[in-house]
Length: 232
Image (cartoon, rainbow, N blue to C red):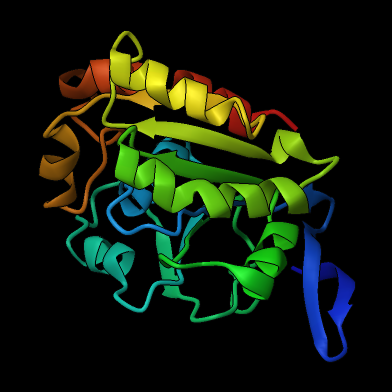
């Protein structure tokens, strides 16, 4: 197959692809990012890969974090489960992408900011920001969300918040919603606080892998999120 990239010059000698086209089809790239550790980036990225893989989509997980948590998770994945390709991207998300992928999910490192954040935002189709509704997490994410809002002017539909470990009916959810009004970034899903994600991760699996009935409640919560992602 042949790959065609359309490039945009950001700075002298700094060129990144804005869109990656594969012979009439489009490889779509999702960035999962939050500057704070422990926000649930890897949980979100790995389970998102599980969703696409279980739908028969050719899926790649790009780990940009030096700790390579996503790739460590893949090392435990059983060969009998739907295939997910993984690799360590270092500081680049545009190099080494499998040409045949339908979806690429990028697990960004904590502390992502500045010109590197700008490059990543321009190189992807959608951005998911996992956010825990605690005073500490919201404060640590405020500058990041302001940067994202500034960079994505005119492209707000590309950015969505995933409320992690929270019930939408609680006071914590209301606090998060109030905090996010300032940024005009939508909450695209609420994922409850459950040990199911911890348990499946230990086996290199996701809530979308068999046996699906065991995680029906969790899978249902992903409905709005994947609808938002698949909307072009």
